Length: 479
Image 1 (cartoon, one colour):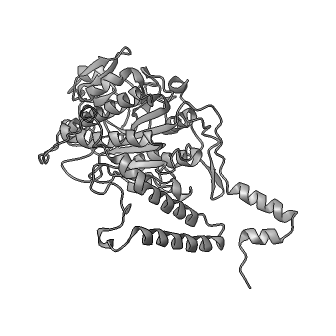
Image 2 (image 1 turned 30 degrees about the vertical axis):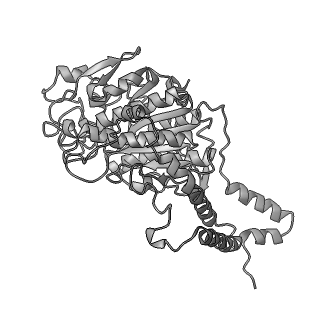
Image 3 (image 1 turned 180 degrees about the vertical axis):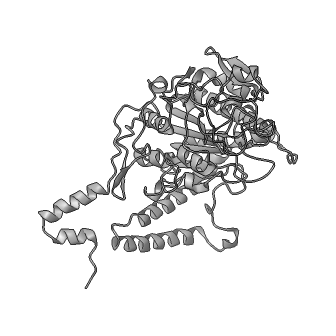
């Protein structure tokens, strides 16, 4: 006796109850993702500084720290530090200067971003939930500080779909040295269909996309046999799928294979920066004829690596990729190649920050002159900030109590500050009304034309969403 699928069982139960039950099941398995408002943006670039970048050394100037540098820190309350970072007050490592008509104070180490100050909006009162890297990273990437939830790019991919038949909707450009905390969990689709997961690409590498082309050992494979093999595989897959209509995994895998075949033509062209003009590559900080970098990390090296990712991002956005996530900093290595500056902020942040600022300012200006910035949101984030007191004299401990995000493009009001930290950069100035990551995510979805409360997926009996049960659109940013 053949085994009936759930759909077939309901259909045999009669046109009345059976159809009604089937309809309710289909509704339960379908997420609500309608666009509610007119979108101001089509694309998103998420810049993630892995390891926790110091807001008070880069973007959030605190004169009180300069005035009281070296004095015993007094927070006015008991503080739970991650390690032992409650030493004396520590002034910013670099001087700050005003930029743009908005006169935004920026650190000298991120001075290249000064050219974009009037396009940028800063949130200095962002609050986290944890001082643990893995949890803080997941919270910013997925909206939850536990694994098992889709990344923001996955939600955007699911909600809006693709703008290109030949390239992924969601692309991830990791740090070339390795993954940050959690690795692929930050961009995994979790309970959403797997085709919405991020596709990893390494611009500038010998193999930017793993397994896109046959291995060198497969020289006996001809174009004709390759096509015939794919056709046979598709036939077998479809037959298998017909017997398992309720399982979406195979359909997602088929779509992934189909996309991979199309990417064999589109991806190499999109990632080929050799035809970009020399002045464009120089603007991004790319060294065309570089020799091997010295062992010690340096700003030019970081600008080159970050510049290649940012220029590849621009080319991908132009060709229809909707969400690009760019990572700076990995989870391994010493001296540190990430932003987790417990020992020495100047040593660790200096090259990373200048290289980031050089490449990202070029991305903003490049998108702007091409008419793409108005419909592309750029979000700069990190898992939490760093303490205004010293750790070991030169370092700073974790600070989840307040830190900075900034945004620009895609309907964001430039030259504004939406929320401030206190005089030390320790907690929000207004502790009753901090900004949470849910608010950042809700604002980005709003600018993409989506009501964050309506973008849901039924999972384990709950209507899950990127913003959980929280979130408000930050009107100071989005109007």
